[in-house]
Length: 222
Image 1: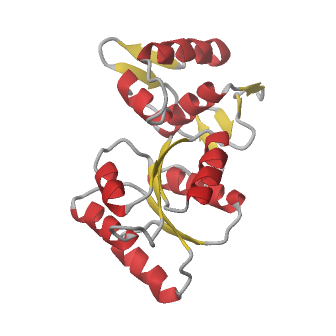
Image 2: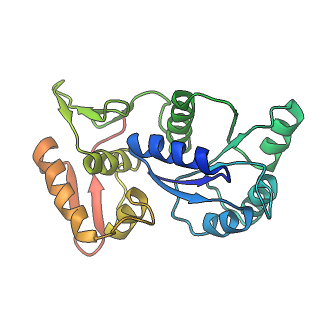
Image 3: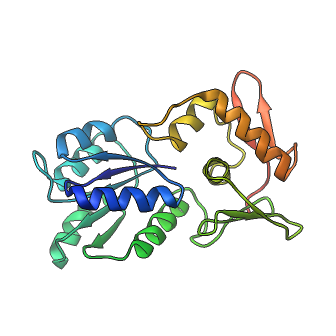
């Protein structure tokens, strides 16, 4: 899953990017409102973490612009402003969640996961599809036979995206966009390699290839 982190505090940028990447997210950073607004229109992000006190254009204006153009990108406002009326303004502008600074990274991660699950019609707890349960803290998957398997970083990112979008055709370009950030070497052939790895671990029939279209994770949501 790919996150747009909009924050102008350089130290906080670095800390959040490191923690989010450890948790299996691809993270792109923007430091000002004008650039953030443009990036939000790209349609490549699964969630945005948006600070309100941004240079050039504040976070509320950025969010209002996205929503006015029909951008449904889930947005978690992250700000030092903790007055109740500012929270109300954020939600009126179209925010999905709100977290005031200072905060614990564990709470931020849980809010991000819950929001991603909710907007994709999953329960807020474990990500469970077709008898598979993904532990997002340990980055492991448990099969219907109750066998727990460890996943590499890319395997985890890829499987999480499949589980959040079961029974949907996902092209290699879509998968590449959502598991890598802008600084990564986006070689689509690598996707094929890790899909083979997942098939070896989970079963060849779990991920179906649609020639000329992409891949489908087979299995009903539970």
